[in-house]
Length: 236
Image 1 (cartoon, rainbow, N blue to C red):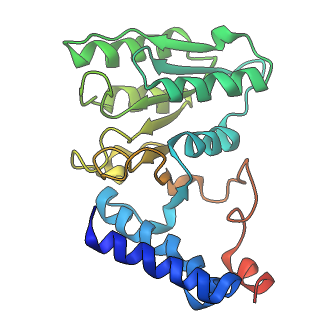
Image 2 (cartoon, rainbow, N blue to C red; image 1 turned 180 degrees about the vertical axis):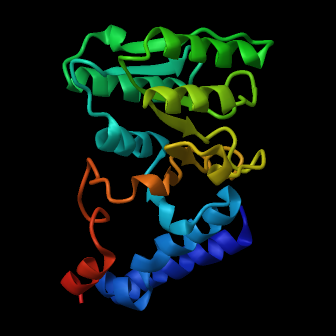
């Protein structure tokens, strides 16, 4: 264990013991997210204001799906990789079930354990075949199974051509490969610090939302789903 982590944990535990709920002011707990998003912004080369902290990888993906997955009779399909991280597939399945859609609304692109371009080509093929009915493409930047780094260029171009949202999972790439989320120009990303950021299972996650979607109302609203000034005012 990092000695600095141990010291920090004990400091916050002592603040909790000494100040109880007043720790929100004394310990600046409300501002902790800003410190984390600032550091993540440096890793992702993104503006910290476009990053939000999530309880985990799955909750981050759930938040994005709740906000952006608005299926209708025409557009309701989600494309993922057949080798995608299991929890990601379960999240997509849960939203398809929530909207009472046919399970076949989830399309899984075949992959190869040897050739990364097979996966990307098959995603583009599925987009072309279902261009009028696909709502979201959600896939990892780096495969959790094969450690393939996927070239998103063709997929991004196809998504933009047909008005499809592109989400990426950074759980297997964050802290492992250089990432410039601005240049990748995806609509959103969800991530975890459990792997190469060395946090371990159950650790904090995060989401990134492209600034072109600024102003979109969050699908899951609550404590951190409103203006920070309002929260501060309500909890003086």
